[in-house]
Image (cartoon, rainbow, N blue to C red; front, side, top):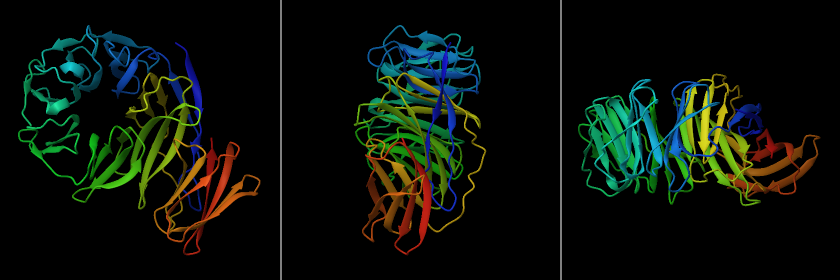
Length: 418
C-alpha cells in the first residue's frame, strides 16, 4: 500500500541565547482513510490497534489491527452502528473494546476475533481501564460505571449517584481516577473498592486524565473547545500550562506530546498540529510541527496520540493517520537565562504572531528577515507580558525576533512563518 512522506516544518518556540530548530519526517498512512478513527493504541512499534466507525455518524463500529507499522490493516466491523471509543489490553492476546450504546467486545487471540458481551446498559461507554482480568472498569454517559470481576464475561453497574458524563478512567497502582463533565473527579486508593468524589477547584468538562511519576494531568474544556492542559505536582494546586489541544500523552514529568486538529478561518484548510512539550521553570514549552491536510477529513474536535516507544508515535484525527519517528531521547541543549519566552503563530489566525513572557513584561519587539533587515517593530505597554504582531504581509520563511524586556535585557529567537 502506498505511503506518502511528508516533511513537517517546525516553528521555533523556545527563545534564548541558543535556539532549537529541527525537522521531522512523517508518514501519512492511507490504509484507513475511508474510516472514522477515534482511538489509537500502539502495543508495539509494529502492532497497532485503532477503533472508530465506518463513518462518523451512524457508521458500523470498526476495529483495525496492523502488524507492520500501519502499512496494512485487518478490519473488523460490528453488526450495529456504534462508534467504538476505547481499547485496553491485559496482555498481547486478551483485550477489550467499548463504545456507544453500551457495546463491549472481547478478544482472546490478539484481535483475530472479537466477541460481543452483554453490558447491561445502552448508554454510551467512553473509556475502559483495568488492573487485572478480575478488575475491569468502563465508564460512560449519564454517570454509567460498569465493572467486571470475571475476565469481562459479565458486567455489573455501579451507582455513582450522578448524571455527569464520564469521559476517562485510569489506574496507577492501587489508585484510580474517573473524570467527566461538570469537573467531576472521582478517586480510589484501594484498587477501586471505594470511590470518592473530590473537589478540584476547576470548572468545565474533564476530557482526559493521566498520571506520571509525581505529576497528574487533566485536559479541560468547555463546550468541546478550547481545551487546556492542566498539571499539578503531588498535593499542589492545578496550573494551566498549554491550551488549544484535543489530545495529549505525557512520557514523564518533563516530556510529553499533544495534538490539535483545527479548521483555519482563512481559507478553510484542515490542519493537525503536533507538539512536543518540554518543561522548565516557566512551564511547558512546545515545538509545534504542522501537518496540513489536503482533504476535509479531519475532526476539529478530536485527535488522539499513542506513543509506541522512544522512536515511534501515532496520531489520528478524523480519517487521517500519521506515524512519526522523532528522537525523544535527545536532550534540548539550551542556555539558562532569566527569561522564559514563547513565540508562536495563532493556530486559527495565521496572520498573527503571539509572544508571551513568563517573567519580565515585554517592552519592545523587533522582527528581522534572514538578511538582517528589520521588517517590523512594536513598542508595548510596560506592564504587558503578552503581545501580538500582524504578520499577514510577511512572506513564508525564516525570521529572527529580538525582544527587549522591561528591565532592558534582551533575547533573540528564530521562528518560521508557514
